[in-house]
Image 1 (cartoon, rainbow, N blue to C red):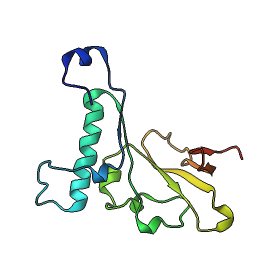
Image 2: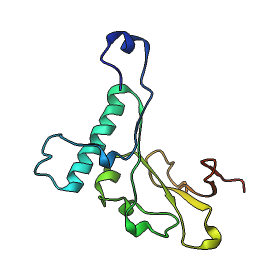
Image 3: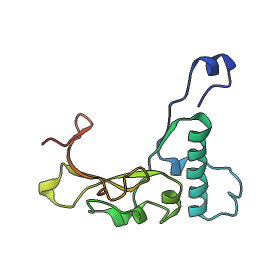
Image 4: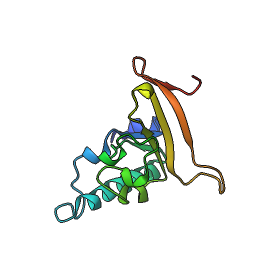
Length: 143
């Protein structure tokens, strides 16, 4: 986030805010003592989205999938850990990475976008099969 040092704010612009595992960010927002876990998650995701508006920046949030996603190539929105609907409702796009339980496909991953508000009407959902190069930390769709 921008520093509260006004000199920095005058010379730097936030273009991207990244939350690695937003679910695990400590939350002290309104109603946190009486809210259910899914309600707190929704508050966190809406708050992160509002930061994007405030700073005119892209906001990326990572999250885990639930155990239901084990062995599923293209996990659904309902498979987001801790929330069947709250995270999905507070985001514009969700990208998932799935893996099937087949030893011959150990290095294959499946990238999907079960939610994408920018998808053109009638366009098919994004689904892409890629090869994971774990030693180098990247995916390749050309193999």
